[in-house]
Image (tube, rainbow, N blue to C red; front, side, top):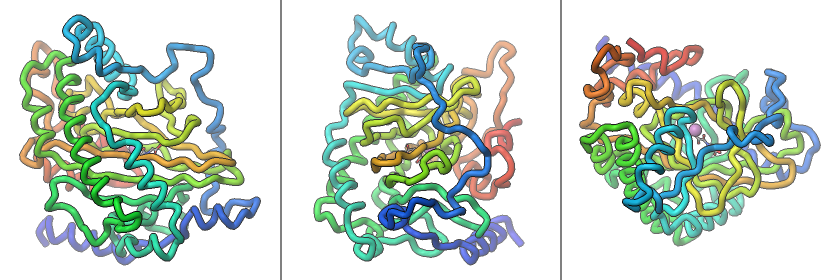
Length: 360
Ligand code: OGA
Ligand code: NI
């Protein structure tokens, strides 16, 4: 059996065992004081004992785009960006160029406010993550996230499965089109500053985001009667190049792991939270690392986020930049084509760290 055939068989196996789970919004509406056992974590962690505390060194770095584009302030801001990418793998950006955040947020809010049967017009098909539903579930024992979502591939245009793009609210599709185009421009721009911050003068990496892939996950975290016992999303690092997240909540829901401590992100209205994904970790030979993060939920309030996973062009190899492997700096990660990288990702062992599996 060829590798490809093997993969197809594996895919259809997961397909058969993919289980449908209830809408968390519906569970939340039932106003029961107890959360079903499948959502209750068994790690005993206190997910609310986080930072920022009074320690200012434990606040997610803030990058001002206006300072990056101004020649007088650029060097200082690039240095801040370098430290943010190196020490945190995440930063918040203000004064960016994306104008459709609010509009997109309103569309997503209106979509999740629709009755369940209406949302289900754009439901995930068995075995696929795209569309309205929940993250992939493969066993009855698996712990579930307190999260409903819509996941859509948006760019390039030929990757769109329009039958899964909501037509209610009526402006949803056109707003998402505009939003993804703006996010693509922002990703190219951020990547050009990230590579500059790293000291790379060639623009190959940032330019590869022009022909890149852009997948959008819109998350709804409904109120939860027992928020301390569940998670909105379990800890993970993203397999993207870079991830651009917009938080419509007004309380810290997203947390990043920094030196063994979970640090909450205090949302700033109109800001974008950018985090490094595994692809940039590989391309920078591990100088910038993809941080672990998770989401917690709230007892009273719903929280919505829109997450854009940005990938470089499929024609770009996923390999450490040659310029970074000089003077005794050993290559840490494998050279992979785009196809090899995704093949490894989709066939990874779930009990193993993905990033460790692509180390040399
Ligand atoms: C994700 C993610 C966090 C959030 O979708 O990969 O990390 O706060 N989301 O929605
Ligand atoms: Ni994530």
